[in-house]
Length: 254
Ligand code: ADP
Ligand code: MG
Image (cartoon, rainbow, N blue to C red):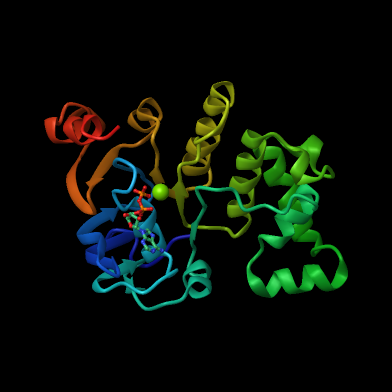
């Protein structure tokens, strides 16, 4: 699917965004942009404002200053549902799955509101939604577990399920908040491979918050680094890796 703005403007454009919580300036004058079809990283020490920026972008809370644009339209004052319908979806640092429901049921709950309602009424989704759910579970390697309770999966498998649930909304862009956090190292490569394929095969643009430097340096073609709520540095991975300001920011915190 192509939009008319395909070549004109970045897919996501964050302009001078400031977000305060009482006296805490969680984000100060942050500007960043993400081109369609790319994988971009967002790094920074704990508390530097990464998750806050995601929350602002997807409309989870109002921003105090600045503008956020997606697909050439200003979305700064839109609510979460509206932004999700435009194709911009985020995942959470903590997984948000329903442990007592099966993987298939979780996939249907992840549907946009209108279709979710139908799924709940009939106890199953439309044929197309069921097929899509099965396909995506296959994609993340959970097809054989589709009728298992999500709570019985390992933490890494739950993260894969959550990723599949995000894909169920047919996003054009995904914001992933620490997708590999807490995952067994042997599962990380599999997850990273799925993220890359979502980008290359499904054409989904990714903005990824990631603490694992090896992962983000390999995956992203451009990286933004936050520190103390401000944009500290931006550039390709090799530049960021050697940037003394970035190194200081990471060494400066325990
Ligand atoms: P990161 O994701 O980079 O670790 P966060 O965006 O979670 O950082 O937090 C940035 C700062 O904003 C921290 O000082 C945090 O305590 C503060 N903060 C985040 N969310 C809230 C909130 N809902 N209320 C008050 N302060 C918050
Ligand atoms: Mg965070």
